[in-house]
Image 1: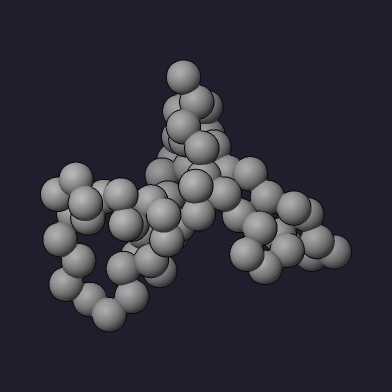
Image 2: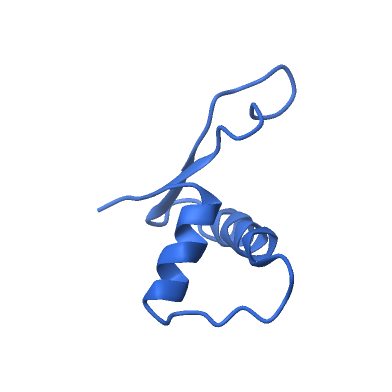
Length: 65
């Protein structure tokens, strides 16, 4: 799922109530921090590698079972 899709699903399910102007940026930051703190956790990041960073709009988040 893209960060936008994660935010939309979380709002639909009543898990978050965004108050700021950029809920996608906030969710993206939270996902990256969670991944850094729990590298062996259930959330994983998938992306197309670029020369220095991931290719723009290629980052997807997945939940490992």
